[in-house]
Image 1 (cartoon, rainbow, N blue to C red):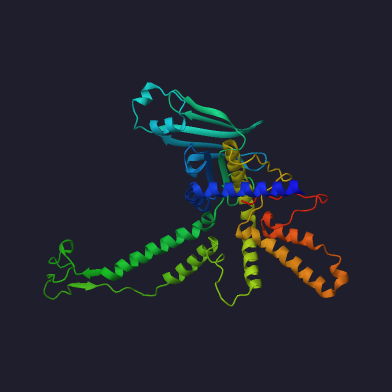
Image 2 (cartoon, rainbow, N blue to C red; image 1 turned 180 degrees about the vertical axis):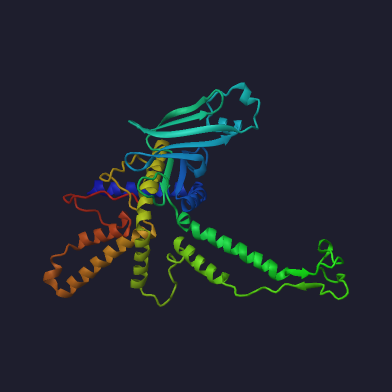
Length: 397
């Protein structure tokens, strides 16, 4: 209907505004830093705040080092309770909490760093927030609630019963340490090969403590003695490269470095490219699903809540019925392309059968389904008649 088409246009406009807010913010910089923690430790934390008025974007992101955070898992399996400790100067505290009254003893030390502890935990109204200036006399800096948590904790994967995640670097850590040890031994062997090991007769003339192996040096020796002679190594069979190559191959496999590279070949067909993308999706399916649940959905919900508070977008209820999020990353599009390819194959077969079979297919409905599956914008479609039910389109971040 016209109302449904208008809702689709409004949601697509909301998606564009949200994308522009991401582009103008520091999201790319801070998200990269959070991903470093994710890959190494298996757990990352991102803080999403509302930027002050006058800045380019209403969104401000901060990557929280995992070493400064303590996480607790809720009944839903998500990390909903988060404690974060950081050290801030008086200027930073007053900039972030402008209405707090600091004691005179703290104001007299403007350059000192003070311990600030922030915490979020779920309550009956959403997420409760508190910030405390720790010390001999703790001071409450701020307390309140949010509809969506400003701290987003996410994991690469986790074992049953664990709270913190496990990253690919954790899996490869034994091989990484072994490779470092092998390289250390190789460097020691190279030092011996360059400088050598020498032996000398204890004849009372040669003093090993005063010998300098430099060009032009004259080393005294007693008459009839052998003097300074090199000590030959018992063997010169170097297996370090064999060990290192094996370790490096296992590390690259653990870090997915050799499994995510798609060969760029001009002779590759579209089917081969699709199959390679599907293989990547199967390889990262579980990790992508966890990141979608723990990172992407809370991130978009939090950002939409901030933009709605600013009045830049209408309030959007992401309940899966009124509106839901459709992810359009390359991995998320693989399944959609596969479904579209199967449908197009079916339509081609129907077209070859003849008119009687083609009459059983609703071309308009097939077109709209393909548009939704492939992520086509709603404005290129003709509005449905008033008598036809219409489901609103989805937000496409």
